[in-house]
Length: 208
Image (cartoon, rainbow, N blue to C red; front, top):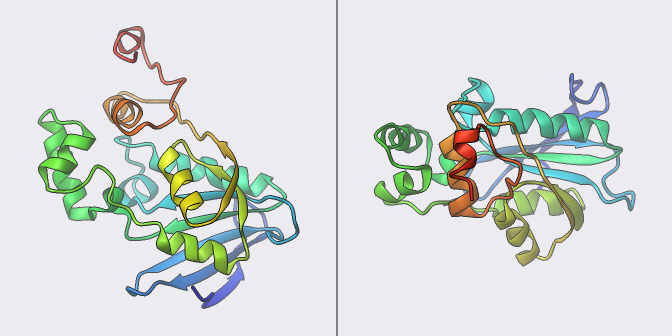
């Protein structure tokens, strides 16, 4: 995937040492990558593949951990000697789109978990495609990486595309009163590594 444009992006997360790169995939969706340092120097870069989440990233929603994960990943990459955050657009609601994500919220308010809500709407639990993210990493010259994620499916997706994931680095966010059920479903039903999730003594009994 060609790098269509890049420019300096001074940021509270990386000072004046970040570059933003713009990409467009074959479907016309535009994505960006924030790059810290020289990711082709031979040092294994720290990488986060972050799926677009307007409710969490822009509006501070407490229903998910997306916005807090984005900020934590940007801080970690900003502090690293080299790293990349790929912001993957078109992944709203794990690939079902913004309108359907709000419909899934309605179903969750009625008692379904995030997985069953997606299924009720006719979607897979996770409908995301990682081809664009993989193309961006290749365009940046990255073949080996340390991946910031709790999701083993991301590791498998990159390894299936020929990348070497040297280390999976957890990105756990403390739960709140609004996202406990969401995080529980991610751990119990989607296999996310959320080993320290135990919000209250009541919750602890259900997190076996």
